[in-house]
Image 1 (tube, helix red, strand yellow):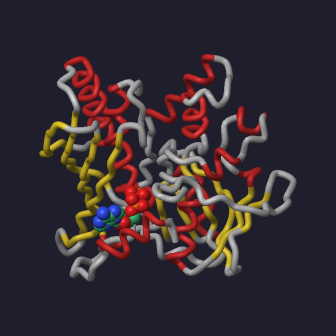
Image 2 (cartoon, helix red, strand yellow; image 1 turned 90 degrees about the vertical axis):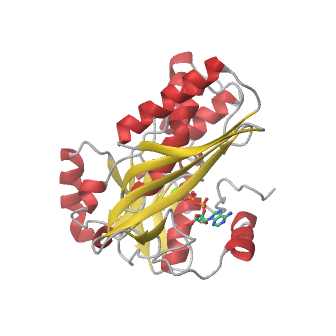
Length: 314
Ligand code: ADP
Ligand code: MG
């Protein structure tokens, strides 16, 4: 267990009376007979989640988008958000850009900003999101079944390439660099609400810390294992050309979804995804094995799997 989760479990996890408390992408509380409220919170800190030269308009977008992603990961629809923001100075230009990005994201995903808190301090943005989910459509991390297909939405690993571009760890043409940085700063969560209304999936999580790290949460909670095939991963052509699959396996900040579904739903999922214009790719399957296996593009199992982004571990 990583230190982040050790801290949560040791100091903050207590028994509650809610239908679902700590441990999934959002908590669930009763709304009415048929629906839950899904509630989640995500924070972006200066120097940890963004740098001082991240454009404020993109930061405003991202702060909300990362929260929308957690509601989609529960099979829900986002409704309301509260914004808590700490700023070390009053910078009008920055605030204008930030609020523009925030409101643009709110409009796209149908979220109303209904409250928050504004304080002075090191720049930090924390959003609490409230969504609704039909009880019969809830997607939890603990419900993956052996033989399920594993799907991911969108493309993965692009944000992590963007981060390495920002950090000047890799060099490439300006146009390409811009594309990757946009994936990093303006994540576009995929709305699978209409697919889940047909109850096509068993379990889900969003990718914030990397495919392997986040898939591992599903596997652990569900008591299963998995096989992932690198040549099936939805990556950018640059990743293929440079054989840089580690970005897709371990890179964080994608805010796409990992979903598992019975194989019998495969054609219906593909059809509906096409109709709804959602990119969904099958990348492997759930197994009853002991260890997660990741096959490289030559079909050889990778030896040492990394854990992805860790908040406290060195
Ligand atoms: P995600 O990546 O989906 O945002 P996290 O990995 O941050 O989820 O958190 C895992 C679980 O632990 C979530 O259910 C979250 O609500 C809970 N959690 C995280 N930090 C705290 C905390 N300080 N107190 C209580 N619960 C927490
Ligand atoms: Mg999440």
